[in-house]
Image (cartoon, rainbow, N blue to C red; front, side, top):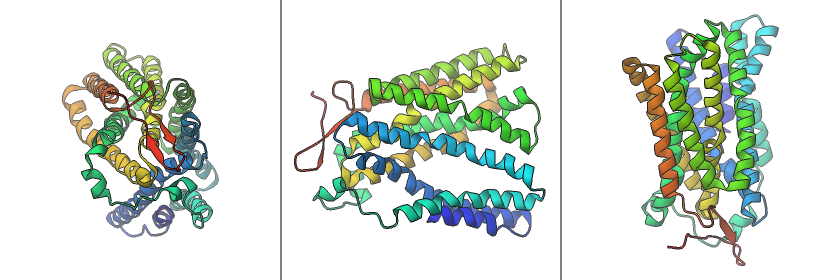
Length: 350
């Protein structure tokens, strides 16, 4: 509901001078963000619990497929921008329609879920609900949160920080652009995530969540370091830089992009799963803020090559934390359904 209100508000309410428009848009997008922030962890929990199977990898496949559609969803606004530019002339109408269209999926989800009951798995658990503060005070959750939230934070430092220097790279490749060219560029660049997600899902099914996350971070680190080393020598070769940039985007969508979404649904029991998933996602957004704050000063002071190398080293830290913090047995993070109907994490033998 909040996501729909935020989208419609962004389309209907911005009027007046530029500061009024900016303030109204910021408020509406904040409301939208709160709504999406609630849907995000719930979608992983819902996909896992409605799989109605005790097989871990079957559950993870369902969660992964739910996550896959995030990338086509991210491409859709740019595709709609191209359509609106083609059909409508008035810019006021273009941006309002683009924001309003964003409310359609939200209303659809609201209608489809408003009368749904909790999953049978959730209802079978007799434990009372506990507050988020109580969960965070429980030391048994600290290592899990370090694995789910800490790794998510590191990944989002790298992922969202990349958005700051992406326009710089893209402008070197494609030159100055208008809105139409910008939209086409983003469609092309975002499409690199689709094969990466597909391959990542296949690797997760084959090797498990932990291995994919560790080696995914290693892959990201390698791509950043490679681009950092080669950026200066090939700065005037846009095709080479573009190729390296696409490989980097592939790596960013391949491993931790999937596993940070899956992992909370694996390690937390039903009564706290969505809450701790939300806490982990919130830590991820803290990482996004950190990335946007530190990358620009590094770029301005030391240049693009140094920035890439720093990002690569942060990704190495993600690989180390994933290896150390994610609890596994037989190289997989998994849970089993007990005869009583509650989920029991199977811990690693010491």
